[in-house]
Amino acid sequence: SAPAAPRAPSCLSLTLSLSQVVRSRLEKKGVPVHNVRLNGSAASHVLHQDSGLGYKDLDLIFGVDLKTEDVFQLVKDVVMDCLLDFLPEGVNKDKITPMTLKEAYVQKLVKVCNETDRWSLISLSNNSGKNVEL
Image (cartoon, rainbow, N blue to C red; front, top):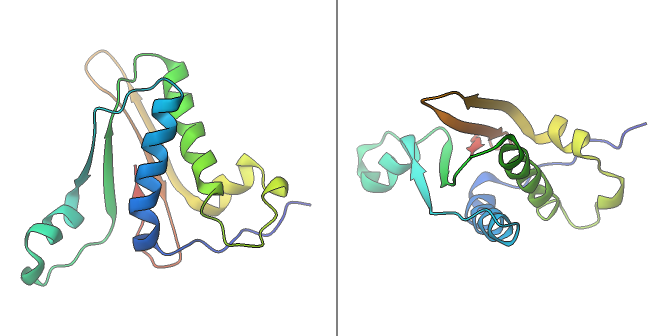
C-alpha cells in the first residue's frame, strides 16, 4: 500500500526556498532560467500591502524556453523532485513515489503547447490554503 500523504510545509516558508531550489536544479539539468517573477495577487499585495486585499495564491513564473516535450517533462520532474527536499524531517523519502507526491501536493497540472502559446502550470496545494503556482 502507498504511504500516507505527508503534511505540506507552510506556503510562505516554502515559496522562496522552493523557487531557489527549482531554479538551481533546472539550470544544473541544462534548462536556463531567464528570470523568476512573482505574479498575480501576491505581487499586488507586495506593492500595496496597505490595500487590505491580501492574496490568495503565490504565482511564480519561471522564464524558461519550453522548446520540446522533453523540456516540459523535465521541468515537471524537477519540481516534483524538489518537493522531496521540503518534506518534514523523519519522513522516509525512499518510500514516496512521484505518484504519491502528485496526489499529496498537485492540485492542478496544465500544459499549453501550440504555435502561438507554450506554457505549463503546476499548482501545489498545502495546508494553509494558499497554493503555490509555478
